[in-house]
Image 1 (tube, rainbow, N blue to C red):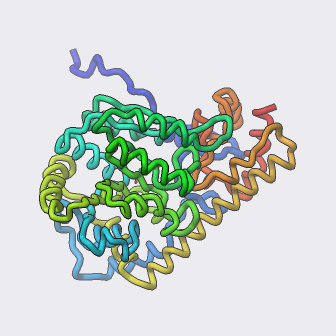
Image 2: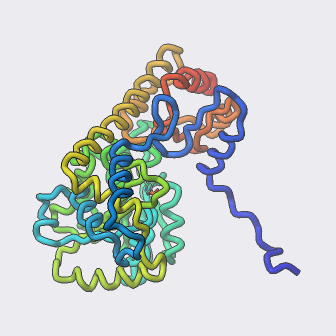
Image 3: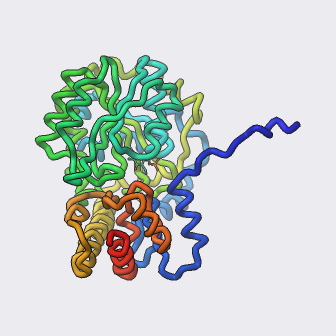
Length: 401
Ligand code: PMP
């Protein structure tokens, strides 16, 4: 018999299934609101002009080659990524209390964090928000965490954050737990803590001695401002906390398939960084040995060049502005149709996504109209365009009536 004869199909990965269904649909009105990837007003992927400029420069640079990168990644990339995250004047940078490790996208940075926490620091319990990005639980499970727990986050009644519930759940966490916090533009809800709420969350993390792992996949996408969007991890780092921050450059550079991310390790004892580095390198060595060059080189080239850096900030603003505009257009269309219910949350939520509040049955109706979205009711606002927003609103209107 074939050794594979007992292999059963795994459940489909929802976003990629939606991509396929949308690609196969012949409906001229079809809309893909599934995958979290930026689209232009024409519904097309956008290669950032500053990325094209960096790639042309790289192509003409005869000093570059395809030798292996260091295990921890491209040094120029790692330090530049930390400066974007914390700002170059932050004390963790000036006091050398932070080091970055290049990962395969934000996912790889998270996986590296999980491996280190489990194998080197013996953590076994992790808390994720309810709901959270579809891959957090799997990543920690794959690293061997035996307890994956949820803290309350989304409040279906207010369509906002349940901060009291969140703090209560974290306050009840057993000693030696890890907590994953979305730094900005929470996926899937688009709902973030206010600065006052972050202070409460920090207090609980301190009180319970939770190990905080920030996930920052949307820096710049929420407000259009890199500094504002990194407020929470900077604030935690201000308070002398040991921290991990998993950064992704997939969205803010549009480098999805280049798999470029960074794991920032903040240690309040700077003298421990060499030991941490050596253990990180061993952890990386058995997973991917050393990381790919192209995305790291692009990001480093842009961040280490003043003119490119300014261009990049402008291009991030182009993306975040268009997303905010589409939030308004969707809400305006729903108001025009007199769609039952209150839709103000779509404008209040930030980042790439909106948790619409549509029920599973209403989502089914949307799918039947070839508007592809997650079963949870999450839509990627970036998939909306001036041409399709009226159709999406009309389908939502029909779905809720
Ligand atoms: N964290 C969150 C919250 C995300 O939304 C994503 C991307 N969807 C990631 C991490 C991973 O990003 P990457 O594609 O860089 O692995």
